[in-house]
Length: 229
Image (tube, rainbow, N blue to C red; front, side, top):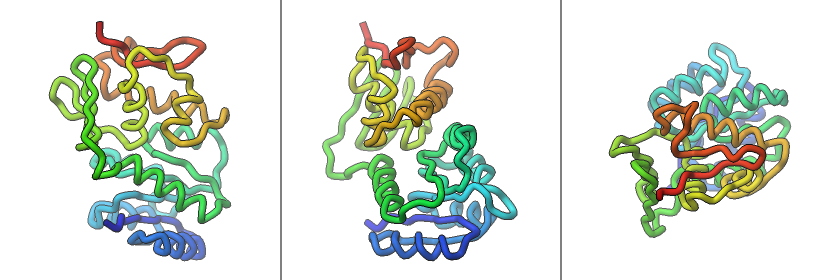
């Protein structure tokens, strides 16, 4: 199955380059040059992944992502020339799965796209696996998370992080370990991204995110999923 990718950027030469590399990798690609067109295309084309430039005319990438997150869990990757850490954290808090700064290698971008899609949609031939802790359940066959029978909408990165934690209840993971197991790479500069994803997950699965019952903080070390007694 050829995955559909939506790319939104106001730089035509970048759109041409990204499209060429993604199509050469076997993806179906739609390109737009402003935020409003990106939102329209995302709603009507139903892409499997959205690549958004942050600074675009008519509507910036953050606005587009916020609106998309209200109605879809489609993976989002930001493309931007902004390198400030605060901007990266903002993107992740909105619900983005990856943040790539310009200039970037098109080959590396294609590799990141493949990794995100693999995490988001998995291998359909894989054996279904379900993990449960209390009323929380994660199913890798249907790629769903439920709590007390109610479906919880999570992003692909949040799903991957939750899968690592719920797969080893009681086991403490450092931020670097979680980065390595969910992103395939671990750099100290990215450790805060784990904190952002944990914060977003707690807001979705905990009755009281300030007093979490599922994802516990081990101060000075990292995080763990509570173990059922």
